[in-house]
Image (cartoon, rainbow, N blue to C red):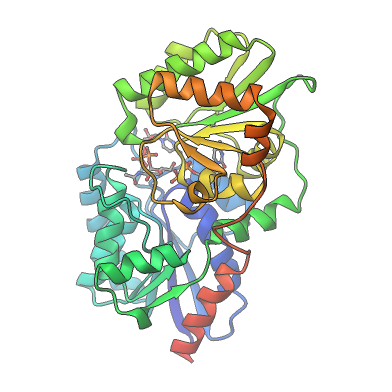
Amino acid sequence: MKKKILNVVGTRPEAIKMAPVILALKNEPWAEVRVLATAQHRHMLDQVMNFFDIEPDIDLNIMRPNQALTTLTARLLLDLDDVLQTEKPDAVLVQGDTTTVMTVALACFYHRIPIGHVEAGLRTWDMDNPFPEEANRVLTGKLARWHFAPTEGARHNLLKEGVVDSEIVVTGNTVIDALLMTASKDIDHGIDLDPAHRLILVTAHRRENFGGPFRNICRALKTLAQNNPEVQFFYPVHPNPNVRDVAYELLGSQPNFILGEPMDYAPFIAAMRRAHIILTDSGGVQEEAPALGKPVLVLRDETERPEAVDQGVVKLVGSHFDRIIEETQRLLDDDTSYRTMARGTSPYGDGFASERIVKTLREYFT
Ligand code: UD1
Ligand code: UDP
């Protein structure tokens, strides 16, 4: 009798980080692999699933324009009742800290189905930052049966919360598995850039930055672009209207600042490789960029990913106008500072995280 493993994806980063796990599980003779897309993201999710050639078996198509978190959670819980009753999986795998993850964990708890949490144990210890992700991962951590922690630091966080050591496996982050699978394909970024100019790549979408902080970030980016006309800026804007409208309002008219649609995953990796510096509030980008040898300035005051900060290749600059300008300008002007941060190191994984996750499940189920 095969064991049915239901793999859940909701948003772009979940798809990127679950794809290597799903593909590895498909090689296991004991596993019946099922894929549930909540489709909390639509276009951004579909694009990644197509790239990795993974077809969801169930698609809840839950995304609505600018949907409130409570509505999203309530609609998901109702739909999940039906899915879990029909599917009756032996285990469910979720990844990260989105509303999809927390809601699926809760629904599985009610249905007495064991949960494996991929990327477990990330903490800032501040429930408001990032919002609502810190709460999502703490709640999921309380309910999970297997905690696949990317780093030793994440394992220690879980131990501190009372998780039993035997239920934690340090695996590395599957984002590096996906990165290595993708980087080897040598796909072009497709952005119209002047080869003579340096590129600053920007991504920003966090809810705790909505409003004033995000406006500060955009104003600082505009000033940097005005002060450095020989540098090109590129920002593939997240479709969340709270981000999109402000980005186009404040940055849309700056000639050396290109705004674009969210990029497909492989071209985005190519854009990171082409970039001189990356400014971001993304979790995944903080993990990928150090492995590609790119300095990262994080547009947040705290991070649940301290390893690259400790190694000196990522720096927190928050949403502070002066600090964003000062630290970016330093990297543009001071070669020693730049080279220190562009060393290339991969504290988040070695490319074998999914193998370790699958091994744990294999040993449990066979
Ligand atoms: C979500 C996650 C966040 C993660 C981010 C990755 C939650 C609460 N937030 O944030 O942790 O870092 O995804 O990108 O789970 N939209 C589209 N098309 C898409 C995707 C989104 O139009 O393909 C728009 C819709 O109007 C949607 C809105 O963006 O309602 C917000 O999407 P949502 O998933 O709620 O939050 P994100 O800000 O994307
Ligand atoms: N990414 C992408 N296209 C883009 C921007 C980011 O494919 O235009 C990828 C990036 O390589 C990373 C992931 O999306 O793997 C990060 O997703 P996001 O920043 O939306 O979410 P977070 O990681 O902050 O949860």
